[in-house]
Length: 155
Figure 1 (spheres, helix red, strand yellow):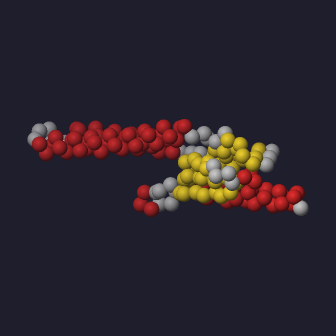
Figure 2: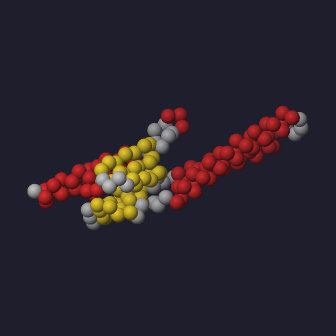
Figure 3: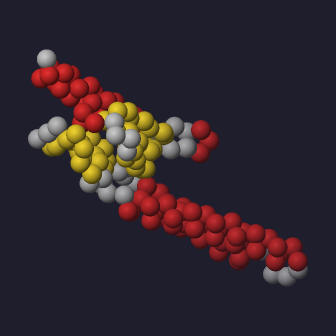
């Protein structure tokens, strides 16, 4: 029996692509509207170009990271957790933590970083997890469920 537990947040690539388009449009608009001569026009144009380049680089880097993250991050297969291709028994899950992505102007995001700590000390972590708080709840429920099953069979 297979259950998809965690997936990559949809729409992040498109959002960053729109950011790149706006930054490029901003740079072009500043280049066209800046005073054609004088030191002030040159300084303004260079600063606007630098801002646009920084925004484009960060958005392009984010797109590269997002695309490298698989669409399905965590799956339960029977009594095992498959997290980014790594198999581990659900009884080996010691702790599950998450952090929401930071939103601009303190807007709460529903996606973020998921970290699964195993009993042997290994850490499994992934960014861009959709509904990361619900994923943590589900993983903890599975952890306790399989811990109880293991305790019942040992009794």
